[in-house]
Image 1 (tube, rainbow, N blue to C red):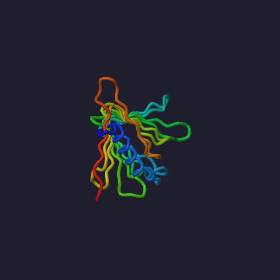
Image 2 (image 1 turned 30 degrees about the horizontal axis):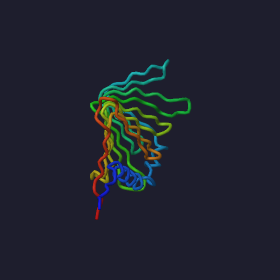
Image 3 (image 1 turned 120 degrees about the vertical axis):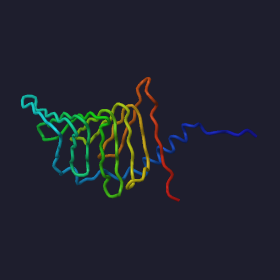
Image 4 (image 1 turned 120 degrees about the horizontal axis):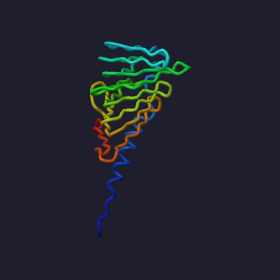
Length: 175
């Protein structure tokens, strides 16, 4: 009798499906959508003609439980008042509480693009995203570029040619 092994990608898909199922019904903090946006920095300059504000030095953007940190940020708004920005840092970081649970999503990368209209954070240049329960690491994903949707809590990880492969780490659950 011959032993048949399931392909390794089958286990990876199972683990990924388990992670998505465990996080699919919980969303980013809903109350954050109605909060004002505050940006602190060492310096800022505003170009009224282009409607772009540049913040430099210890930049911190706060909107409810969403916090973005970095060295430099360009920020602008569309006509509906939605905020968009590009944060550069060593690394640039974000953190946001998930709605209904004591969990946070944290990310870091060399560049962070924020789309306030669709609540999407795009991390590029050595991107890392973690799901934390309090201070305990639950899951982690890394790649060259990572797009995270705060509303649906879905993300996509990509690795460019010549860059390290995308990687997901799932921590064992409580027994």
